[in-house]
Image 1: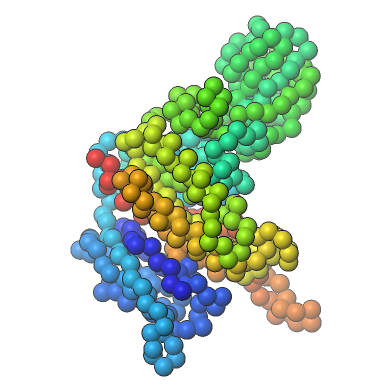
Image 2 (image 1 turned 120 degrees about the vertical axis):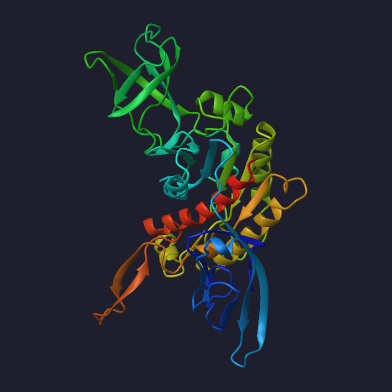
Length: 419
């Protein structure tokens, strides 16, 4: 019934919250009395909280107990709270964050970066093809471990092959062009065909529709007319020469700094079977993705973040109706609990434990209040309003920031480990 990771990482002067719905496998986790026991912090009806101070640096046992109305303990499990202060990095560190649609807006990486930046400015460099201001990352809607390991043609960072009416051999490589107010940069010229990569601020649309005219960025009078186009190279980690993922190729091609830390936030995509505890496809491709990264950058550390629970207040059915994949919010909740447990065990395998660390997000995410909602009448005849979720898997902005707060605590722990 109780799903606790082996450890949580806390930071001095940063409020830690552990929500009971995120650790108890019950349709109604408040059916019983839930209590947290720890020498530090406070236990409330929905959550446990602890804001450590400098004198609290160290480790503490936290026990969650589920108790019936007669005071009998139904189940009890414990974890360790590791309290850190923010350590100055040994050098400027390069951080790569990879995720699915919940990473597309870049909010959680940005929150982690900004909180660390306030303590030790200019010591972290977040890399990636996508950006939220100065914070780089890789976030792709609908993708899962498998997608990141295959050749893809649709994404927000895809390149495009364009065929023109005439030979384009005189077009300078790296020249910038505009189409539909989006910037494109010439990467390869092959006769009548040009391969464009995306330019500045051109990562917001998946395979945007192109007009027939490309206009030179610096010379508006210079225009070229295309005949057709097709997208390619949507997986940022794909090496077409090797026909496989290649993180060294990704770094070199995009002129990025060698990563010291990789954080993954994957994935609810593909977890469409309710009450499932089998993750064969995820295991196959998570292994391929993470082990290839380790092979390419053996000195880097990998932080594997678990996923949050779906909305428990109508958001799932608002997106998926009353039938079919993903529509069963509680069945999906159980699958998520099982998946995160599998993911933690995966990082603890002998072949992974030296460079991978699991970090639990779901218990630090308030799935009752961190999704978008609207106020609707409680029934057709009443004017009384109630909160109903409008999205089952994608948080509100405050929800994304809550994930970012948790990520910051994990970031502090992982930075400390880089020697």
